[in-house]
Picture: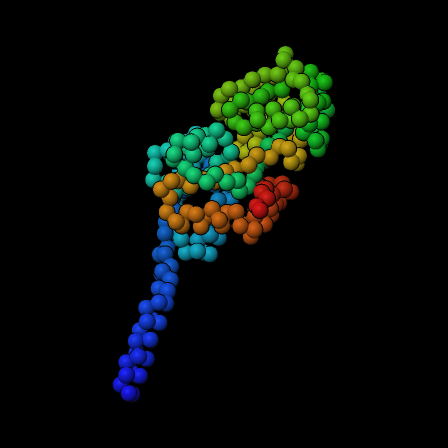
Length: 274
């Protein structure tokens, strides 16, 4: 009788042990994430500091595969072998997804534009806090306005014009279609024109032209978002980096990064993450 009970008990234990779930898989080993990053994030020291924080938190390694102007960064990503790309929101980024090369485009921070113009300031906009009001004064004064059509400022200008029912003066509006930002300011100085340019390259003196000064800054309507996207072949750690970039802790850090380094504002601005 005892032998029967013992066999039954052993069978029950065996049945119980085989029905238990398997142990969780081992944590993935530390991985290397290859990235392509717009040049401004490197030049300000922002991206290296972000990477340092991420690597300390996770043990992963982030390898910079490409940096520089947007066309260079996007072209490098298209060649393959890069896990993650971040540049301004643009048709180029949408096309990476449409072409099956990238996925999950998500905004994660913004930079901002400023309005600059001739020292004489014929439209009297210096110190204006509203970009729309400044643009209205430029139009009313029939002052030259240089619009560069390939660097994102045209989209910001279009929204300001449409939303505020403004009409650009066709005679005073000048077009620049090149991709050399230095040439934008040179042309503005030559024409005595106002124009929009990235705040970061201006305050870091990467972009400069004699006779062109800062006129308007700080309007939220002048901000432009950056997207981050993953390659369709990205390793799992790349998704961890994206989550880190959009985390509340990182967004709070973005809001204060660079304050006092070149002016009294942060270099970049956080986004609202649900």
